[in-house]
Image (tube, rainbow, N blue to C red; front, side, top):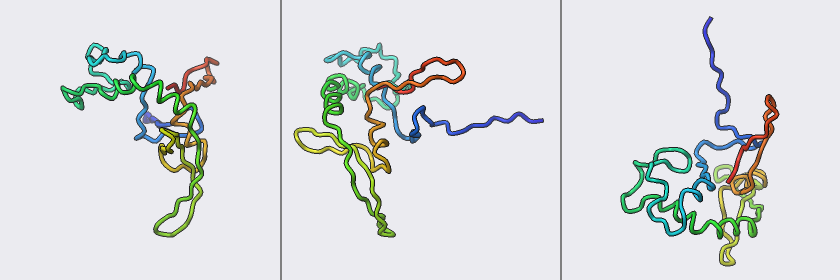
Length: 154
């Protein structure tokens, strides 16, 4: 007569692709809403919370507070344009150095200044490459309430 808590894969997403626990998700809409271009103060009232809701007081330098957020705000148009217009999935071949076994893998790349820039890691399927760089919101229908919920957004 003991209570049991069953915990499954707690890092699962609503897509067919599971999320690796070390992949940090940045909620771009929140970052864009928290700062305006040329706003070095952070624009968020200095509450110490970063875009994923975690307190970031411990990892900020006094002289460089939220510089990555400012960079996102200043360059978001270029980032989104590059991802939307130049991304391509490239088939590659990797080799296990121990067994010399070869694998067909896929990798996402974009073009910046007419040069290929590879993003992410080698993946076993093409759709795995694109999942982290998809800027379109994804929804799902909750089976118990029939409500459409946001599963992922930029």
